[in-house]
Length: 193
Image 1 (cartoon, rainbow, N blue to C red):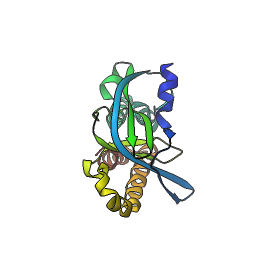
Image 2: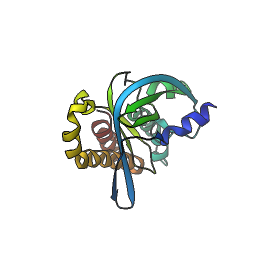
Image 3: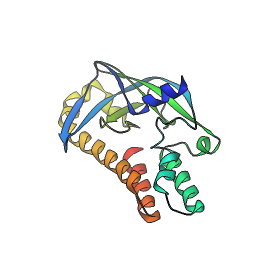
Image 4: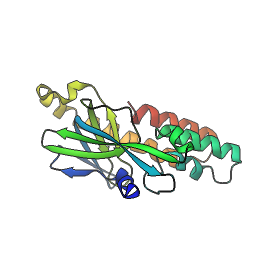
C-alpha cells in the first residue's frame, strides 16, 4: 500500500483545480496554487521505485562508474535535494501527503519536502511527465484580492516552474561531481523556496 501511495509522488490527483498550462517543447506545465488544508506523514520502503529519482537514488544513478565514496556523496546530496537524507540512510523515506484547497477544488500531492505546514500558501508545479514540485510562496498569492495580479503573473509562474523542472533534469543527467554539485544547488534555489 505504501509503495502505491508513494508512486503517486509523480502524479497529482486533481479534482477541478485552478490550472495554468504552457506548451513548450512538447511539455505541458500545470500550475495550481492554494492553501494547505491537511498534511500527514506517509512512509515508503527504501526499495520502492516511486519517487526515487528525486531523492537518494538519483545520486546512485548518476554515480555509475564512480568510486564508492563518490557514489555515497552523490546519494547523500541527492537525498538532500529531495529532502530525505536521514531517512534514506535509515532504509525508509518519510514523505508528506498534502491537500491543497484552490479556488475551484483541491489538489493532492505526496512530496519528500516535509517543511510545508497547514495554512501555508503553496504552488504545485506539474510538468506532466516528471516529478511534481510543491513549494511555499508568499500568502499574497492566495489572497482573493490578488486575483488580477496573479492572472498577470501566470507566464512568469510557468517559467519558474519550467526552470525547476529543467534543474531536476540537469541533476538526473549530471555525469561529474562538479556538474552534480551545480545541479543540486540549482534544484535547491529554483524548486525549494
